[in-house]
Amino acid sequence: MEDSFQGVFYCYDIFMEISALLDEARGLWGDEKLTLEEIIIRLNVVLGDLSRLARDRQEGDTLDELQLKKEMGNIIYSMIRWCDDLSLNPEECIGLAKQAQLSYVQKRKK
Image (cartoon, rainbow, N blue to C red; front, side):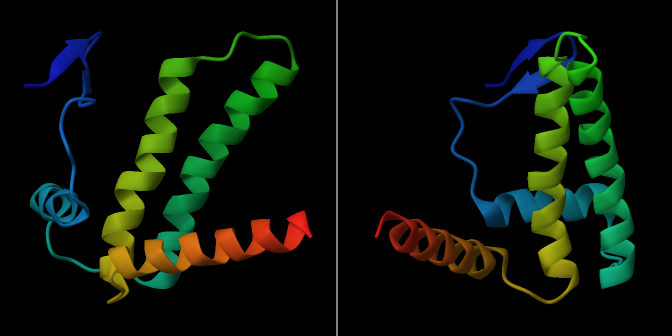
C-alpha cells in the first residue's frame, strides 16, 4: 500500500520492476513513440528544472527536497519510457550503464 504525504505517493515498500513501470507509463501516456529529438527536448525541460533548483541553492535558498525528488523521479520514470520509444530495452540500457560505470571506477582506482 502506498503512503501519501502532501499529495506525493511514496513506494519504499513496493518492489518496482522496470517492465511494470513501463506498462504503467504506457497506460498514462499512451503508445505514441517520441523521436530522439523530442526526447532530448523533454529531457532538457527536466534538466532546466534541476538547474533552477541548483541555482536557487547557490543563491542561498534552501533546497526544496520534495521538488528535487520529483525531478529526479521524472528523469528515471520518463527514461524508461523513452528507451522503449527508441526501441531500446531499458533493462539492457541499465546493464550497459552499470558495466560502463564499474569499468570507469576500476580504471580510476589504478
